Amino acid sequence: MVDRTNALSDLPFAHLVMKFAGINIHVFSNAVLLDKLKIFWEGSAEYVYYTNETTVCNEWKVYIDIADLTHEKTLTDINGKTVRLTLPMNSCITEVNSFLREFITKVTLAEGYVWLHASAFELSGKVIVVIGNKGDGKTTWLLTAICRKNARLIGNDQSPIGIDNGKLAIYRWRPDVKICPGTLDFVGLSFDYNEPVIDRYLMMPFLNQYEVIDFLELSERSNQIIRKFPLDKAFGITPATSNTISLVVFLKGEPASEIQRINEAEARLLWDKISNDPEIITPDKLENWNMHIPFWNKRVNGIKPDNDALKLGEESLEYLFKNIPVFKAYSRLSVVEIESFLDKISKENYYE
Image 1: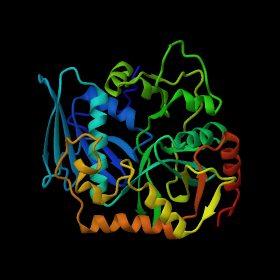
Image 2: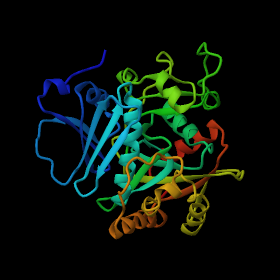
Image 3: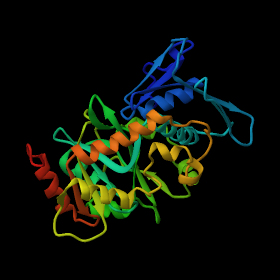
């Protein structure tokens, strides 16, 4: 059963407010859909709540309608900060979340945030960000930290960073963690799901979040067989409470005997090698989204960064290089080696 505590239908004329990276987004739609969105994004967005406030000034508004259409339609009013998404009758939360991910990514880029291809977690009060290309082991680090060290989830795969009160912060993003069976085997969590082929397992922080996902629809849309992580095998995923970055680990392909602390110049060289990764998105890439980000959808057009946003993106990266301890690690470390490093950085002042 879906928990309808503080449900939209109980609040006349209400809508949903979602906050990501300090940006409020007001979402208007039918009660059933907004209840599902609230459940899905809780624990990931900075906050999600209902309001019956009728006046929304200078904040983004998203209207989601369901109509007798064969294809979705999107209308965007940049000056009015309004987007209207109209979906066919048989649409589900998968399509809505796909749209919201594109929209939120573009809005945050236009505000100067930088999106890293990284996993991130909080361990013993320290926020660790692990940056790497596809297949380098970001999810392995995340699972090792969560299931072996009781770390708290910030994000997997992509997360935005920005300067917050003079510190570099990374913000919680999508709550779903997709895991391939090979990664589960690697970290010692393999099991028999009684299906011949499964491409990905999906883990969520809260059990009721599984109830709002249509796994058959998600599999069809992704062209993969995706199943929920078996609840009897699940370990707790707790959302992080801190977001100020303590240290960064770059995953690289070359074998190395140990995880090494590197200086600013070396960190910049590593960044130059991976910054062409299409899943690392800086504000300047928003200006030519269709060229730089070919695999993303292109439904919300016209959102552009101004000079201030471009400068903020550059300042975030400068802060990372100059002020954050940076390490480099072989992308194929064993779980034991990852665990050992996590134990070391848990100690006070280890990396300072």
